[in-house]
Image 1 (cartoon, rainbow, N blue to C red):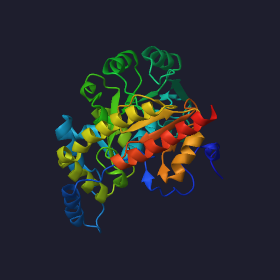
Image 2: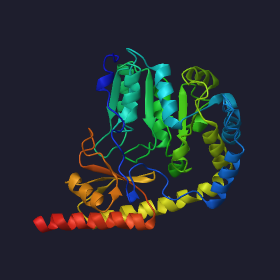
Image 3: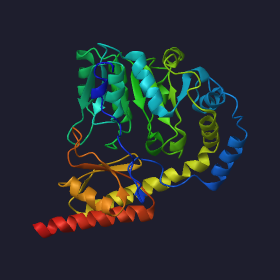
Image 4: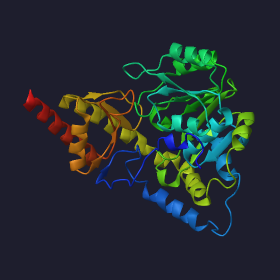
Length: 355
């Protein structure tokens, strides 16, 4: 017998994933890793002793991250993507009668992780332009006795950042644990990390799946006080991160200066595509500090069908609460972005003919 309510939980995805000629639906890095990085990963993987369990506490990777980020290794947790760690945070602070709050619309897994630990959820709505209100967040947290607040910065799928001044105001006015999900930090550059010592209730989650191009390896990390890190670690299984992923993440972090050169190129392509889409007409493009764009159109399914016909996969959010009419487009390589633009122009022309 299933636990009550489990069969009502929404799945992140269901069925087989389509095979796209142009895959722009998952906010992955659009360019492959440089050959020098791939060769270095291959050499490191050849040294992995496959008959041995991985280093249980991932100490080499944690030390590498800690040294660079100016924290103690005991303040660093690693997991199967930052999602694994966010789930552990929800298990640590959530539970029956313990409310978990987050901005909405945002990452679709937040309410699922909360439901898995029987936590009531409190989605805090963004405004019409998908901006966060400090006053609304603080009031919601205080009135509902929230036990965990999750803030996605920059936010997925809307793309907008929370200004540092606004984020700090929230931290100064709430007492509950606050998790800042910085999956797209490398594209934005804004971070709550410098405030870690000042706010003992603060946690910061990051991932190797986006800018670092390691989505296949599913590796993320969490930064928090030693006390919070120890508590969260109790909800992580032994050997929860495999040796191959750890090795690949170590190489990528060591070679980050080479890898992250692509971030600048992605941002240039993003801003260029945003301008071109806006000029095409019949589409609203929201500001983005990430590697994707959120767009809104009157007939999202019609545009999505045009994209599908060309073998282009994007994420259709038009049936998600708060995202009516919206599609999310990962920034691709120049030819891929040109294909997106061509479909949008075709869509705009079809609408114009009917007027």
